[in-house]
Picture 1 (cartoon, rainbow, N blue to C red):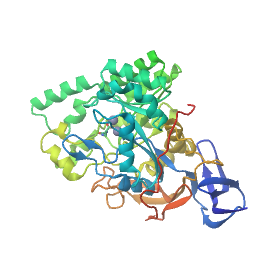
Picture 2 (picture 1 turned 90 degrees about the vertical axis):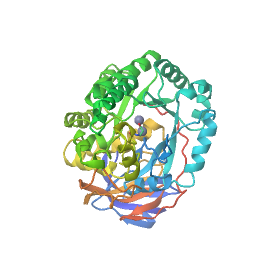
Picture 3 (picture 1 turned 60 degrees about the horizontal axis):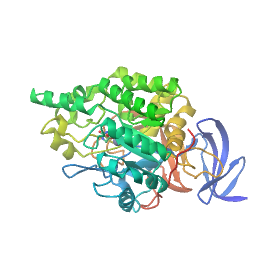
Picture 4 (picture 1 turned 90 degrees about the horizontal axis):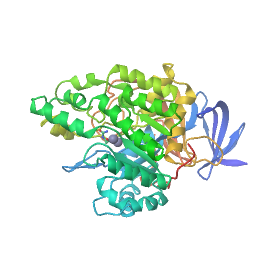
Length: 457
Ligand code: URP
Ligand code: ZN
Ligand code: ZN
């Protein structure tokens, strides 16, 4: 049979195997894997890896914050940057308005995202304090494709412990997966207030007001609540050893707890807040950047399966947006950094090249387990019938990260001048080439909303 497209001579790498083969694509799906396959279009991947498209299940495009702040990547610019970096599926968020039903909020978010996305996407449903009165709608949200539910233990959307218990129970009863921002908000707000009152307003006081032990406490607390209810949970953006220890202990007991970390915690540390002027405000995100000891612990946890995935929490704000908050005090700086484009290659470069992770573990952390955890049924693996979301990855190319090189809609990057060894050469979404040799070939609206469901863990 002659297929629509064949990728020839590459080394196929999945979470579990590495082998040389041709790969055929037909009707947007992986149609055959073998030797000497032929296609209308043939691409030579000799010397390169062919991997499943990367999956990033924690991103914030066009995130609306109080004070008319909106994160600067749109669903178009953010998914285009993702595609340049080899990511072919994301999960963003629905944040319902106070009197809005979960289903209407989902429809409104899709109305914004659908015409813009370049790659496939899903949406987590946020359950904030206003949604406690809407917990009878959780099953409908699950049926509509939101199989994951975001619960905050911080910010204005923070749930108190009673509300957390109610939300976790409702999500459990629909087989959904709660995904948690774990920080001890009462203690943090007290520290923030005290530090500002004492005149300590510079960005260095951001991590000092949100110490690692308070992230660990919150993670431990929500793990205990989830254990009591018998519901699996996933802990978002783990920044420190304290949380790793809690997840590790829970998993050791056989509890269904998982965790992720992000490039900012793997590549940056608290020294970034010492940069002069507004530069020190740019890396403000929550949880904050931590110490080099934490960084080493996170890499080890990824290798040991004490953390299961790498996501980005991609949430860029422009220089002007950061500067505006910085002019007041550290607590007013909008939190979030851009990482969506560099994640896959950066984890390869620092993880695989430097001997911290195996090739298969890299694919597992960035592609396979995020897809399975978020409930993307046909993504994250290279197998017949799976979506032809693929990356031809050149392990020998070298790039230097800079705001000019990257395609995120923001004029700075926290990774300026970091050298990365290995970069995606071609990104394919549902069988269509959307990036080739640094050229964008996709189109807004080409990506599809994927209805997700809980898959076997
Ligand atoms: O500072 C961050 N991480 N901003 C994005 C929202 C969140 O907490 O995930
Ligand atoms: Zn968060
Ligand atoms: Zn986030």
